Length: 234
Ligand SMILES: Nc1ncnc2c1ncn2[C@@H]1O[C@H](COP(=O)(O)OP(=O)(O)O)[C@@H](O)[C@H]1O
Ligand SMILES: [Mg+2]
Image (cartoon, rainbow, N blue to C red; front, top):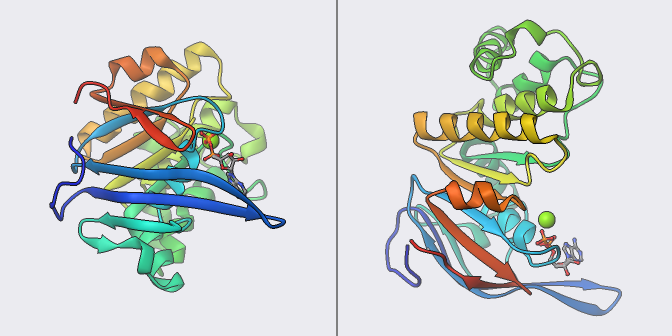
């Protein structure tokens, strides 16, 4: 991994800044971040709270826009995308997994996993079949008809992973995905994520406070105060 490389595949950030403005106060969240992340990388992002980790993920996943700088995925310019195109990009290209799994409580596990397929306009029958296969791949086919409230934290996160992978996205963005889980469940979910990522040759950016986990991943960056302060050993 190196900065300012003129490559068109992978994730490319050049001099990216993000400033939030709240009640006329400017809050800098990212300051001049440049990163090149080749496709297929698994990258841990560590750093204390408020360092800009989530902001970085949101910008790479086109959930939010940079205030300045260049953000590209495979040469596609994310900072200039129209909203509808950004929305299609997110649904087809990016899988998101958050600490709070954001499952829809009134729907069953399989229905939650079906959401990206329904949004993409696939037929309900095909979508349900694929959602069941996805639940199977995270070891949860026996819980397909349960609602999130009837599942453990680890099981809920498995559903969220199945949903995130439904469209076979090349890019997975995980923001403290095991932050709410006990140690044993955390380990299981981490192993599952890493296995799925490698099997499917996905690129994953994983924000974590777990230094043990970060040290086991192939690449690491440390963020502080909106900047990448340590690029680890790439
Ligand atoms: N939507 C927002 N509006 C205003 N400020 C924000 C918003 N999101 C994040 N921030 C601020 O940006 C900085 C970076 O936040 P964040 O990316 O969430 O950090 P981290 O994920 O590393 O804890 C913090 O100072 C935070 O308060
Ligand atoms: Mg965060």
